[in-house]
Amino acid sequence: MTDINATRRLAGIAACLGAGTAVLAGAFAAHALRDRLGADAIAIWRTAVDYQFWHALALLGIAVLAVEPAPALRWATRAFVTGIILFSGSLYALALGAPRAIGMLTPLGGLAFVTGWACLLAFHLRARIR
Image (cartoon, rainbow, N blue to C red; front, top):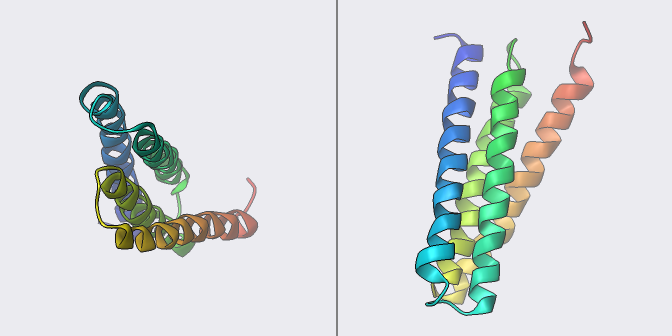
């Protein structure tokens, strides 16, 4: 598999998994957790779902953009996946009552998201207009 195909495949698979699990997490909160968690915990959960879904859409965009080898797209993919795991994952855990120390992962996930967007910016600054 060529480098570009690997990037497209990884980004596409991560987009589908990320968006699909975001929908499931949102539905889980709306139906199974709404009577078990307080308003603050539900708000934290919603933030996790929102960020996960938006970055899954960004991954889908990478899968579409990746038509020629571009290291910036590979790094953006890695950064967004890492961000979803660290940012959204830590917020889900906190909403469910994990120790507050887990919250130290949240800003690292946010940094990963920003890194992904910076990689996409680098890609677009270098892109050839056709």
